[in-house]
Length: 317
Ligand code: FAD
Image (cartoon, rainbow, N blue to C red; front, side, top):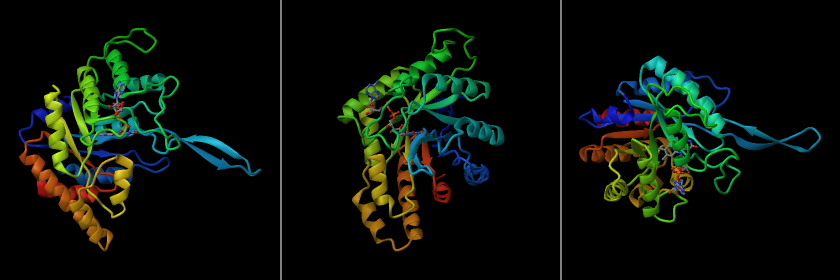
């Protein structure tokens, strides 16, 4: 079953979460422990993020610098397969344009196909840390919509060089990202929703949103999407705050606002644990309201917040 079918068949709001592959060189035990912490809430699926290489400069013994390309979190495909095999929960690996050529993406699709992984989240991906603006690889994609074309062609049995193969019996299904507070590069919300609608017309079965801390932003986004003719499920993404530093980090990194009521309370927290507890309470309130509004599913960004997500799920599900 694909993600849209999995969540549509539920009467109740479904639960899903997102994990990051371990850092290069780390083993997968902690990741599996984290997943096991959340399995009791019957996740309908588990997302696995994808990460590009970053350019780094290393000092050589002669004092000169060496430019190297390092992928700090490789292994998305392998970790996704390991999770699906170990826990029998469908996985949704993210496939990104950023840092990947079309040919590398094609090999990843071939691997995913062999592994029986058919749900994907297609994204442009974050820009490289040393880049001011996103730059596509020379032989890569500039937008998630271009990646969709490649996946749609693959589903029809067509490689990027135009040669043909037997089309997969179970084609890839996929979702795309949506931004209740607008994507940072978009000139305005309407323009962002215009491109989102194009992605849905091209075959996206559902949308997962960027995190937000004010449900009104989500409700208003969904209303505007519906008015624009986007009818697919729009899954809200929630992240529990876990530290006071996120007060400034989250707006900077994700281009989202924190409501003043949350910011005020967060400033008052004297310890990390107080901040974490506040994050749990805020997220519980958000999730309860979204659930009452009948959202099909809630997606939790659980990075460094697995215990918080567990506490939230205990109260909400
Ligand atoms: P796009 O759809 O390409 O949109 C980018 C911008 O271009 C938007 O402003 C849009 O309005 C506009 N646009 C869209 N299509 C076109 C077009 N055809 N022509 C002109 N303009 C267009 N990043 C990672 O690196 N790895 C991850 O695993 C990851 N997971 C994520 C999961 C979720 C749920 C979300 C919300 C984000 C995730 N990101 C991830 C970050 C995401 O990739 C970035 O926000 C990125 O900047 C935009 O991705 P996108 O797929 O929305 O891009």
